[in-house]
Image 1 (cartoon, helix red, strand yellow):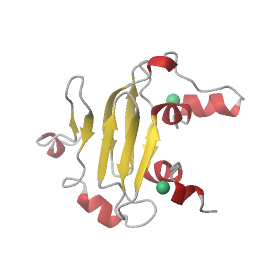
Image 2 (tube, protein in one colour; image 1 turned 90 degrees about the horizontal axis):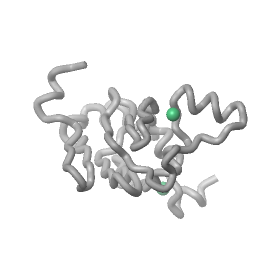
Image 3 (tube, rainbow, N blue to C red; image 1 turned 30 degrees about the horizontal axis):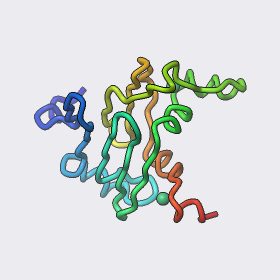
Image 4 (spheres, rainbow, N blue to C red; image 1 turned 45 degrees about the vertical axis):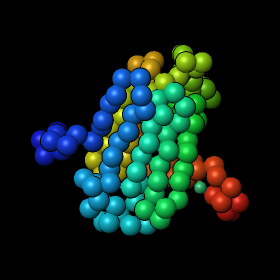
Length: 140
Ligand SMILES: [Zn+2]
Ligand SMILES: [Zn+2]
């Protein structure tokens, strides 16, 4: 889309290793404009085989396991399946991995899965609301 982002590249890939998105510098203006519950994380660490860890501007860390993310995929097809009582599951549940990730505008994270599914975009507030840490779970 924009060519300005291409120089640095929001998505650094290393074969086999952890996939990390560094949003610290490039996306800082986004975090300041949206300071509050919907603010973008200052750091995203993606473990392709296990989980996505997001560090929020207030220092809070949210770690979301891949199966949880996959089952809550916000794309239209998965949302429709959930509404009709179906279960959203990967065809490769035992070998679920993240094949790619990218920042989508100012508001979310797009994940591509090892089974080829890549249409879901996870909004920041959505991701934060799924935080299962002790602090967040004890909140009403
Ligand atoms: Zn989906
Ligand atoms: Zn939390």
